[in-house]
Length: 212
Image (cartoon, rainbow, N blue to C red; front, side, top):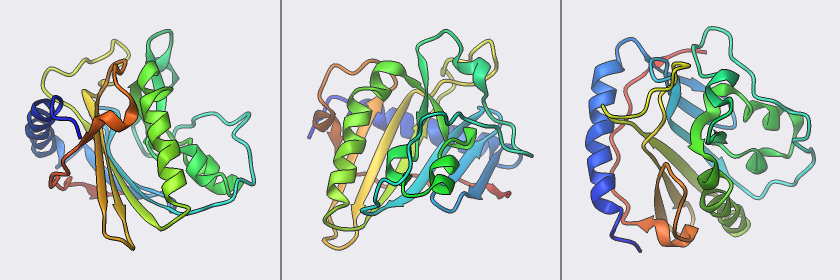
């Protein structure tokens, strides 16, 4: 369990509280996509929390040919925010977790589920952690909460979307009662995925208006 990132995490926890209280009345929304729930900030054009259950699902469909799509009545990021830069369209609810049906897989390609995530994080340590979660789900049902952190100094792209400062994945093992939490700053990681494990802390609950 790492200690080096914990001061950064505490700082970002304060930051996300600031963001939540600032934008909750008009910009933060909650919606249920059935396979995941998302708290979304339209001012940031980014999700701030995504939660979902992970169970041992069979892979019945492939993501080939699927593209991210915008949602009616939601102001989100779009293709131009990810054009010719280091930011991937990072699935917060992973496509690989929900490839048991075309409907479930397609739901993960909503821009409501996409965060500006550094390409080396998304394709590296974050992806390996998601693979570990799928392996753990073969033994018991998991509940996962992804928190996306912002601050007053977060990078705002010329295209309008705000780049997250960091990400935390909290994992609850529902049968054994264990928990695991992992924190990543939004940059190319210099440690293995398991070296990003941190002490689980109580997270602030986003305030959001229901839509959808």
